[in-house]
Figure 1 (cartoon, rainbow, N blue to C red):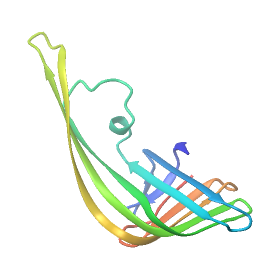
Figure 2 (cartoon, rainbow, N blue to C red):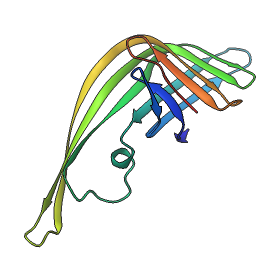
Figure 3 (cartoon, helix red, strand yellow):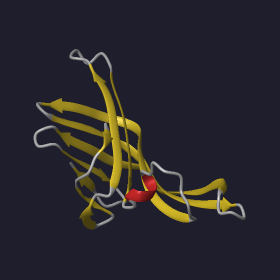
Length: 149
């Protein structure tokens, strides 16, 4: 879990990862009394806007994507390889930020507006992650694979 930087292939273009976050949790008991897993990912190529530590000083718009596991069908752990299969929702999130300043240029208000556009809903997919080497691949029907380290 956490922020990461590496190489990835998102939306069909191999580029250097600007910023992203992925996370997953699971509980798989040895006797298979119950299994569960949750997973999600958020990624963007706009590192300065998604991971900013200072308030914005000008208006801007940025886009990020989010994927969420909505129904797990299988979870497995073999050695250092972890796999979650199931059905996923993926959305495109566009955020517009407006910075309002007073006559002296001091910021008096920052407003955020966003739109969420579903790209796929209940699409079959799989998250594969490995510790050795540290990498992951998220493959969901309807979008290009997302991979990184």
